[in-house]
Length: 148
Image 1 (cartoon, rainbow, N blue to C red):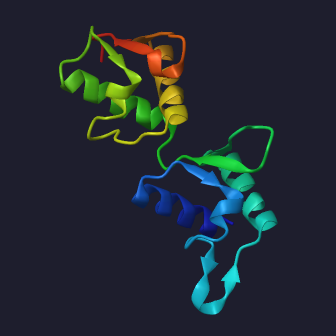
Image 2: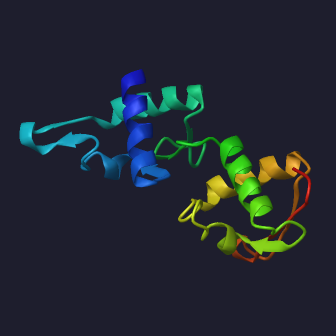
């Protein structure tokens, strides 16, 4: 299981992917080797992801179903540090940024919104930002404070 976990995390990091749809992925290159006609079955993949959840490199999304998962090739705490440092280094503290602006930086290009929200939660708990709720996630804003 640990070997599969490393392979999945490495694959997702390499391709900058975040969400694994279990049923769909069984036909993809990660879990299906066409040359030998061999594929991982759904139950085994669910067991692998369950182990990854225990070790903190994945989480079920939604939590009550085992149909898809977020793969953490960087944990929310790591994303929080990277995002805050990017804001600080680029002189954007004490200003409000939208989620769009945050996920379209070089470092965070394409960052999954659920991963971003978890990272922002960490930043808020550290006292480094405040989140302003909008009518939807797209309308949210984040004010980063100038304390590093």
